[in-house]
Image (tube, rainbow, N blue to C red; front, side):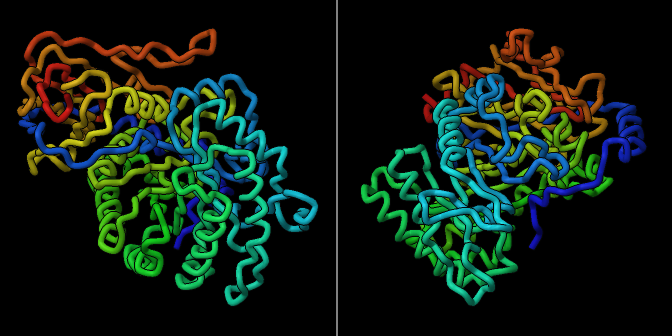
Length: 490
């Protein structure tokens, strides 16, 4: 397996400048126009998502890990007003606290759990601060427990005493923890059978500390890089015990110099389809539990500067949000809120990167009911189209559209919708065609935090005629049809 969150990296923006220049020249090409018919099956409901489908993660990396200065959970400024404000705008959401270093954390709770040399320490003062931040911003917490505590090798049993003390403290405080995980990407350290036995122990602890099943946090596992065969085997070992099966998947690699070009290729986007389909099949064939992408972004190894934190990352992100919803996932945990080179917020002032606005618009526009669509196979490699009930208008339909073609503008004849006008368009483009810009433009206006540290208005362009929907090369957008006439969405 891959260590998907490995924090230390040497790539720098300057080392990628030659690729950056070449990629921008790649955009200066002749354009063509393609008329394409899209069918929205307004009566075909695939799936209904929870409000927390769109969520995000935090990690434990220390300040000396490249890309993680003052971004790890032990060092993040949780009192920062802008961080609090911008995070609260993404609620409701699940805030997963975990990552590779989660299995080296000791919980300093009570006099019988002192920190030890070689471990990082989460004392209860810091835990109180983390929980207070979650409550202040309207987040639920999902917490990854250390599965290696007390182990020198895989044959030794898990010492769960520290974990149980921590869970007991958390339960006594009534903190908003909605899920507990155990271990992070330990597939090369612990056999599936050992992990399954540990999960059964954690199930018992959760049940003891939260005897009321109606308020009991979920048990979430196995938090490993996706391997459909191993996931299926783990489901067979733990079905009926685990509430949510979760996996990690990153489409690209942060140290790959070709990553910017790869993101806007059909194969890169198709990886989200293939992985989520395989994961859901592995889970649903052996249990009735939920399926989450517990950790994901355009690239692992903390992402890539000027790529996974810029406009170009949106091609991956908006597409993956659409694909996972269609493949009946109930959670998409984006890596990360802050930290690495794939954060929704930057680390200098906690200002939004482009994917923050992509997520914010998704949560504002795309409802929980997922509808089926038909895109011609001749166009589907470069044109992606997703439809949900509108979050804003009863009976309306909201769509997310991605165009990764470098030279084709698609004119879309959307059928199945009662009225194409009026419609609301949220067109997101790269400033000056720079796909690796730290900014994004909404209907031609650059989105930035205002002088009084507030979000800018996210207003659509109202189209009042029955013209076809147009999407330019290498761009993405949301379009809402308020008068779609969908009975499912009424």
